[in-house]
Length: 96
Image (cartoon, rainbow, N blue to C red):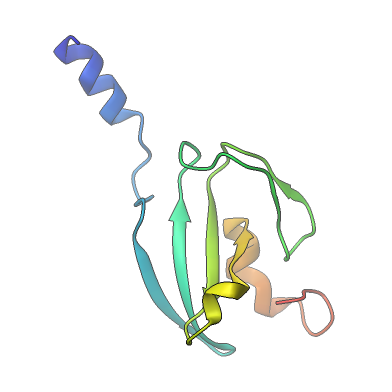
């Protein structure tokens, strides 16, 4: 593989999208583990619980789940904007 090709592949990864890194975020509705997925690491279609629209494979998005024992069973895939604005919707607009 030529050095030029290797540089192009590295440059194609968007900045600010770590892979495999979980962080804990505190929100008014509790602590959440959050993982940001790049489009390249996403291979399935999911349905966002915030807007009820599809997150297509290859689209960057967030996976979030409650930060308590057994909370990983509640893992959900969200559009990044829907995750940030989920508390603005009010009751009854989202299951999570």
